[in-house]
Image (tube, rainbow, N blue to C red):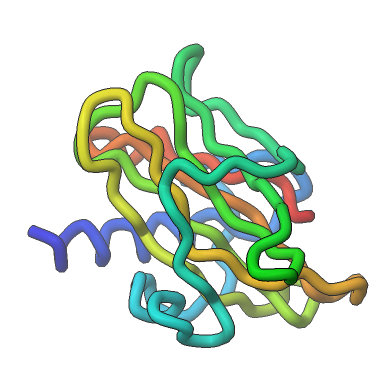
Length: 158
C-alpha cells in the first residue's frame, strides 16, 4: 500500500507544475525527482528530521478544505534557519504532506515526502531544509487527503 501511495503522490506532484498560486492536479507537469521520504530523512540532501509538533513562522498557507490546511513554515533549528511543510487541522490517518525544494528557481526540484498523518487531528511535518538568500533556492509545501487525490494543493513558492 505504501508503494501505491508514493506512486500516486509522485504522479500528482508531476501534475502540480510551477504556477504562481496554489496548484491543483490539473496544472501543467514539471520535472521532479521521484517521490520518496528517503530523499530527505536522516540527513539526506542536507535535510534534518524535526518533531511533528514543531511550529515556526508561517510563510505560506493553502487550505485543503475549510478545516484542514498545509503550511510552509520556517524557524531556527540547531542554530540554522530552515523551512518545512506541515499539515494541520481536521486531519485523518493517512493524509499527506510533503515539501518541494528547488535550487534552480523551480526548473527542477526534490520532493521531500510524502509524510502521512498518524491519526485523527494530528499534525505532521516534513523534514526541514536550510534556507538561503539565493532567489533560486525556494520551497513550497503540498498536501492531500489520502482518499481524495483531487484534493492535492501546494502553497506558492517561498
